[in-house]
Length: 444
Image (cartoon, rainbow, N blue to C red):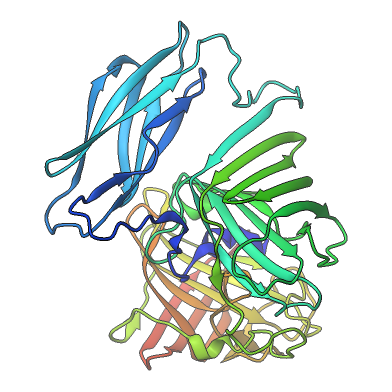
């Protein structure tokens, strides 16, 4: 169940350059990546990716339908650099629409072509059991890390996302996005650029060159909130990498997904972070040295009105011999995670799977009995341990965060099915993070 929090998997890492095109010495501001888009006859939402160079304060990107209004629905801009255009189902002949994208006096036209309405589209029909159908996906962004031989000898490791929306400036996934996460190993080159070659699915996860790790590789479909996010693990995969191109073919739930990406293949260099890795007894990889927080003062977290508190049994995740639980405390608005959320990662003194977690926990980076694990980013760029998040209204992405790196947590029985959670935590800047709450902790 730890992957329930996979929407956090893309958190607090830099927005990689793969989704950016640099234009030096030009007075132009607006650069649209693709000006011709294809839409399936069954209807879909297409994504227009653009870059703004030297943006002017107060100026915004605007859209205008020039033609084909009858085939289009909502046009939204979920984030800077992304425009989402809804294309309605087509029951007639091939058709096209033109949408004008403008920034100040600059304009670019995007043509959306939709196939004839003959039911031959590539989208899957939920009521169709024909596993011969294919899902085709054009990735616009490549974001990820090069680890070198840091986590094993004899092969270089490359972990990356192929997606339609990329990451925001806080390194977070956008809502309603498609993210194929691939954990691949290549022959040792010492290069941050993903090497050319054919990569095959490795069910044994040997870490051998030209393999794809089956345990970590997955499809992540982000929804409007954390709870709407879906994670689907790969059943098989092959990947061909050539100059500035990736062709990925995976099988998920018996359906073939064909993913293509064209663009730069260079990843963020993570070889120098946290020492040499590989056999390090510190499960955090020394991440406490990189603790982060956006807090500027003490924070008392309250959970009143619409909220949800739940526990998730994680097994012996930290390999201490004791049960590990994650306690999620979420404020909500209209059913979505909103505002302050606490993620508390605790290790008990027992092996129960049934929520036997009452006790007092000391925050530490060293796993052990009665420990609340301090917050850090793991090898796969996933926030692990104990954190405070401040979500935007409506969920999807958070605007603030703090790794809890010190302090104490007590969870006790308040009677009548209720529990009391008392947190006296501290972030890396010395700000106090406190909470005193009583209510029902649900099992997830």
